[in-house]
Length: 369
Image 1 (cartoon, rainbow, N blue to C red):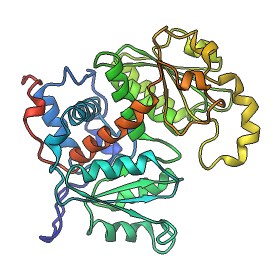
Image 2 (cartoon, rainbow, N blue to C red; image 1 turned 120 degrees about the horizontal axis):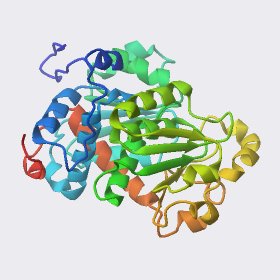
Image 3 (cartoon, one colour; image 1 turned 120 degrees about the vertical axis):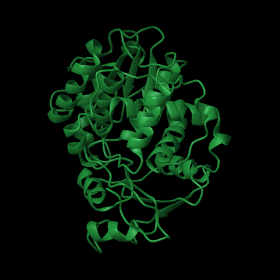
Image 4 (cartoon, rainbow, N blue to C red; image 1 turned 60 degrees about the horizontal axis):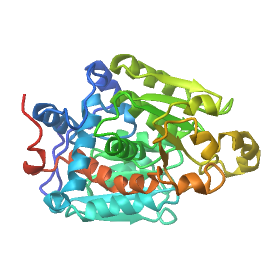
């Protein structure tokens, strides 16, 4: 649906919600695309379908759309100058309830180096939903900017703002998911494994948290086999596991949950971990420490993975807690490549959600069908 705007604002189609995607059978597709396989038509279709959309969850994306974001991210990284003015005169606002280094800076750099402007609102001055309702706030903000980026404690804050704002809303982290992180992570995986995540064994050990949710969903979308190793009572949410397995049943990947960390990493191509105590759960740190100690990623645990297995972490890391210095700083660690790729993925995401006109040259390698 098109929104009628004044001349000072852009027109957006109302972002399609997950329920609409399910009804139109566009959420899950039988084929798995990799950036090298994505046809010009498939990319163009994804480009059209993503314009004006929200990204609240990885589950909002079809397999083609996920592959298109990653394909564009690789091209953005390879030829950043080609996109220097692609977001000219576009405005982005960020509302963050949680501390941030990588997320804030990579979004700001992505926007600024594409010709747009990035603004950050101090939550002590304008707390989300306190001075006025999220509905009213959304209806104000959408008239000034073209995209809203949210980093919140509650996922409901993001979905509520997306419900009312007619401009795209991006989840930059919530208690439920971290989709931008997962996209950057699988961009890094594709770089590491010859351009495709299909068929790799991707293992996550630690807390079955928001990052684990997004990784599991995207692994299923891209045809990677995903094993989640967590202590009892710290597994990912059952509904997210069900979502991931529904996708995996179609794409041919496997989603496995185990409690034994050694069994989890056995034969893995990628070993991923996160902090044992996420933001908002600091009061549980003392309780969690002994529970998660057997899940520390150290050289002994990594020895059960493939010899060239990549180590990944979303950062910030608690050195010698969930991961030892030897692994974190070791030759197979790609943690800083992940951090860099946040910028490239988020630039690609902004370009697609804002319907930017893309240069043709970066996609000359994609054969038309």
